[in-house]
Image (cartoon, rainbow, N blue to C red; front, side, top):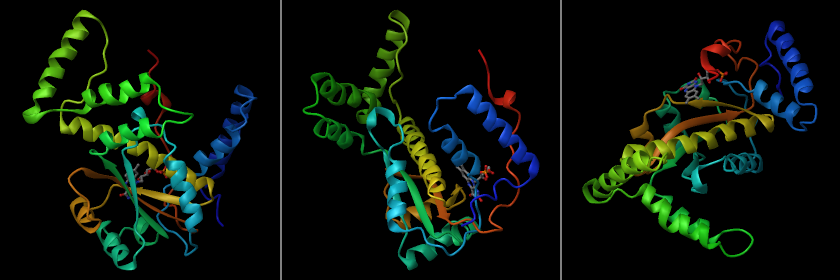
Amino acid sequence: MNNDNSHQDSNANAANLEAANNEQALSPKAPYLEAFTNVVESRRSVRRFTDTPISDDVLRDCLRLAMLAPNSSNLQPWEFYVINTPKKRAKANKICMNQNGARTANRLIAVVARTDTWRDNAKQNIRKFPDGAAPKKVRDYYERIVPLDFLRGPAGIISIAKWGMTKAVRQFKGPVKSPYYTYEDIKNWAMYNTALAAENLILALRAHGFDSCAMGGFDEPALKKLLKLGNHHHVVMMIGAGERADNGIYHSQFRFDYDQFVKEV
Ligand SMILES: Cc1cc2nc3c(=O)[nH]c(=O)nc-3n(C[C@H](O)[C@H](O)[C@H](O)COP(=O)(O)O)c2cc1C
C-alpha cells in the first residue's frame, strides 16, 4: 500500500519533521499527537485510486468514527449513502462529472444532511440516554428548548415571535443564542454538522491506510433523484475513497500564510 506519497518533496519532509519535533517539545505528554499529526499530514485529496478494495468492515469502522463527530445537541442530522450497486454507481460517476476522484474510487459515498430528523432524534436522545433514565433537565431540553429552536410555525409565525423575543432578551438581559428563523438557517445547521462528520470519515479512511477525495463537483438534483432523496435531504459532499494510486496526487500540498487566517483578538 502506498501510504507516503503526500510527502512529495524534501522541503515538505524537512518542514514536517521540524514541526513534529516542535510538537513533541510543546506537548510531551500528548499520547495521540504523533498518530494524529501523521493522519492529518498524510491526508491528501486523491484523484486516482488502485483496484484494492476497502472491505465492508473497514468502511463500517470509518463510518462509525465519522458519526462520533461533535454535533449540535447530539441531534446527528447526517446520513451516508454508500453507492454499491453497479448500475447506480455508473450513474453516480456520471453525476460526479466522471471526475477521476469518483470514477476510479473503490467506494463512493454521498454525505447527506437532514433537516427533518431533529424532532425524532431529540426523542431518541431521551429514550437512549445512557446510564439510566434521562434526567429532568435533559428531558426539558429536548422537549422544550430544542423544539423552540427549530419550530417556525405556519407562515413563519413562530419565527416572528422568536425574533421579537430574542431581540428583547438581547437588549434587556444579555447574550442569547439565535434560534433558527428560516428553513435556510436549519439547512445551514444540518450542513455544517454533517460536514464535521465528513471530515471524520476522511481522516478515519486515512487512519485505516486509505485515501479519499471530497467532491462538491456533482449535479445535486440528479443525485437526489438517483438516491430517491426528498426535499429535506441535502447532499453536503460526495466522497470517493480507496487506495492511493502512485499518480493519485496532482501536486504538492500548500496553504497560504498562517497570518492571513488566524486573528489574535
Ligand atoms: C467541499 C469540498 C469540495 C471539493 N470538491 C472537489 C471536487 O469536486 N473535485 C476534486 O477533485 N476535488 C475537490 N475537493 C478537494 C479540494 O480541491 C482539495 O481539498 C484542495 O485542493 C486541497 O488539497 P488537499 O485536500 O490535498 O490538501 C473538494 C474539497 C472539499 C472540502
